[in-house]
Image: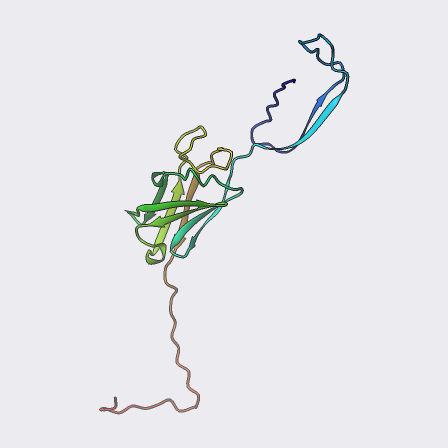
Length: 173
C-alpha cells in the first residue's frame, strides 16, 4: 500500500490528473522501485457555494445558491439582517433545502412596503453555523438586496359607449 497526498488549489473546478512515473519511488518494505507508471484522472471542485439571487416567494425570502447546501447545519438566524425602512424584522426560521435557504420573517414580506436583506458569514473560516455546501465550504457573505412591494399607481378612466355621458339630477342615488 502506498499513500500520496494531492492538494488542489482553492476555488478550482475542473479535471485533475495525477501521474506517477515508472521508477519514481522505492518501496520501503522491499527496496524495489515501482515498475509501472500510473495515471489517475479525477474531477475536482474546491469552489464554495455562491449566491445567485434572493427572491420573495410565498411570504418568505429565498436565497438561491450554485450548489447543494448542507441541510443538517443551517445558518443561524442572527447571520441575516432584514429591515423595512428603519425597522428590523426578526427572522423566525431558517430552512435549508437543496440549493436554497428560506427565511421565515416575523412580518411576511408581502405586508411590507420595502425590504432589505443581507447575510454575513459568521467567521472567516469554514464552520457549521454558516451557509455551506455538503463538504462544509462556507458561502461568502451576501451584500444587501432591496425589494419594493409598493402598490402600483392606479389610474381610473371613464369610458362611455355612446356620445352622451349620463346626467344626474339632485336626488338621484
